[in-house]
Length: 256
Image (cartoon, rainbow, N blue to C red; front, top):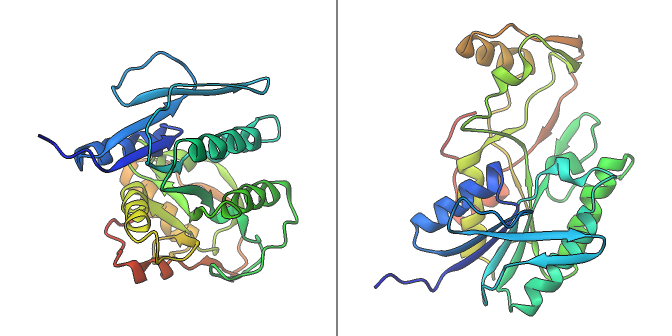
C-alpha cells in the first residue's frame, strides 16, 4: 500500500502550481490543488473561490503543508488577492497545516541598480512592491515562509517567444534574473524538508546573469523569433542573488 503520509495543498494550480501538484503526486504525496471552479479535470483539483467575502472551498487535507502559487497577475489592484490570502491562512490553521509557504517575487526588491539578497532593504515605492511586501508580511506574521521567485521559464513559457519583435522598456545591458520551473519546484520541496531549520525568506534565482541583449538574442535565435529592441543601453546592473537556499542542500539543475 502506498504511503500517503506526506500531504500538500497548493493554492493556485496554474502553470507553476499544477506542475508542483504533479511532482508531489509522483513522489507519492497526497495532494490537493485549487482553482476557482468546481469543474475538475484532474483528481487533485479542488475549488477555492472567494466571492463578495464568501469563501467556497473543497479543501479537506489535515496536517498538510500549504504552498500559495497564485500568480502575480492575480495580485493587481482589482483582484481580491489579499482577502483570498487571509482566508487561505485562516483555513490552513483550521486544518492544522504543518507550514504555509508563499511564492512571492523578486519584484519586491527595488528596481534601482544594485545587488539584492534576502537581507536587502525594501523601500515599497511602487504599488507592486507594496502588494508583494504586504502579502509576505501577512504570511511571515503567521510563522510561514516566503520564496521570492525570479522570472519564470519552462514548458510552454519560453522567453524568446514572449519578447520576439517587441520593444522592451529596459536597457540592453541590464542583466536577467531568471529561474526554471523545475528548480522552483525542487526549491519548494527543499524548504519543506528543512522547515524547522531554514530561513524564513529565500530568493530562487539561477546564478547565471547574462545581459538582456545576450539572453534574448540567444532565445530568439533558438525559436526563430525577431530580436526585441531596447529603450536604453546603460550598463547599471540589478542582480538578485539566489545562493542562500543552497545551504539546504538545494542546487540549481536547469539552465535558463
